[in-house]
Length: 252
Image (cartoon, rainbow, N blue to C red; front, side, top):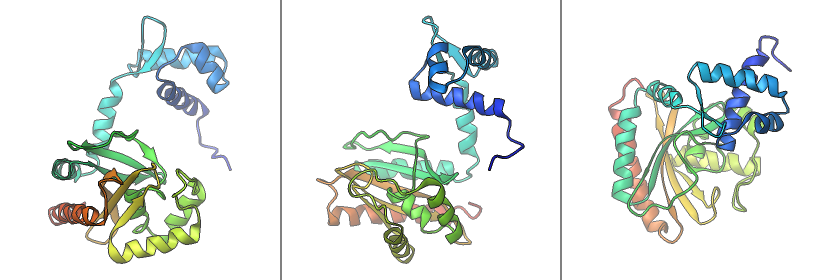
């Protein structure tokens, strides 16, 4: 059911911005074809966004998102009071483990990576700061889901689904709920090649004093280096970092 208070012009503007990101820049015609919107409308939105400093136009008449969004990103992350502390701990985890360490939060039913650090031996992945993904197939995502209210979990699954990323992704609701129950008991979530074949992750939630979840931290690496003993070692590192964050943050 459509909200009568929704402003269509605003939606169009953000559709244009999203398309510019997905296309890595584009001209008027390509955007019009992509969005099925008249060229004149696209041109008007682009002109307004450019005049207000949100996008730039290169010498080939291609439009790109501008650096003004970096400022917006900075202030978005500052909403989270523990961000600087989490960033420091994630950086140390990456250096100590040699793998990729990251911090993710939930927003609008999606996992949003707020910080990522690559260790000396880390495998490059498509993951970047700001990357959004569904929650059911990642260690951080499942760690977050496990400590959300039951009705919120239901709402997220209804909205986002349980689409498979690999052949190992959990796509059965009952199976996912059983794993979430285990995570609630142990405080640990795993990603056994459920997002990218060949990559394994272990994650731990960061919780407020009242037990609600703020986000989660994980370490990710290739199966060749992430056997049971190594996973246990990394888990101990993450738990130590989470403990530091939770103890020193009485108002997370």
